[in-house]
Figure (tube, rainbow, N blue to C red):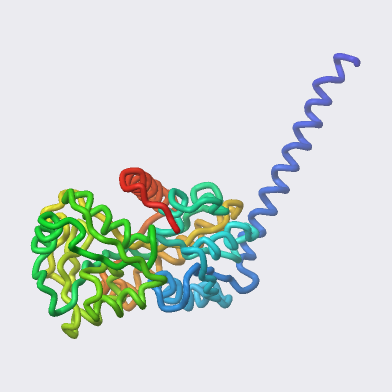
Length: 332
């Protein structure tokens, strides 16, 4: 090849590469400008009525108004949240299928479920944290345990004398109770149920001694004096239960568990779309009516970026990995 031709050839190749890059960027910008052009689906991997469903419906209608497209909440329960999460992980990364992911399916399941079918930190991009609610440790209203210390003393004097409910093996409530038993160096009996409904029924009937429940599910029973709240699982007290101490205040240092939920997008979703969704949902979370509703359950969160939410998830993943290793808990 003539050496004098090489610079000209390189110039042509550079120009072609530049044109291709401009074309790609223009296409991405066009996609961003036209997004959304059809309805958006938020998959909730649990049945209607749960906390994730509440979060999705709180933001869904307002997000639809902001984006001028319908937002559909699609409940896909099954396999402790894994079924719906798998569907979302395999969806096209175009911003039209999102996931309302929670503690269990995004931080816990990967350590307790064999052949999960998705990798939370690989298959999804965190978009925004919507809510982060405490778990409330509740006992029947006529329980002999007036404080958490009463219950702990009973368990320490007679191991396995105290039984607790959960909405399923390896769920956040189960892990919180297991962490409590580990922290006070005692053994408590785990009674798993297929969902929170039956667990709550048996707690009300006195068949079990306590239940770490979502705040939204238990508050009605506490305010009507059918259940008594002994403690909350987060480092700070709930504004709506100011007289109920935290577990940490009650003698278990550094105890911190919550039931959080946030929006995730399939991994291939363009960053520009993730950024836009984050901005729109943060605006919704700042609305007084929405914030008041979230504060009632102690689940309101500050404005957060995708990077901040990603760091939040990574920290929770590390915490549950250590807890599962310490307790040996595995899903059924």
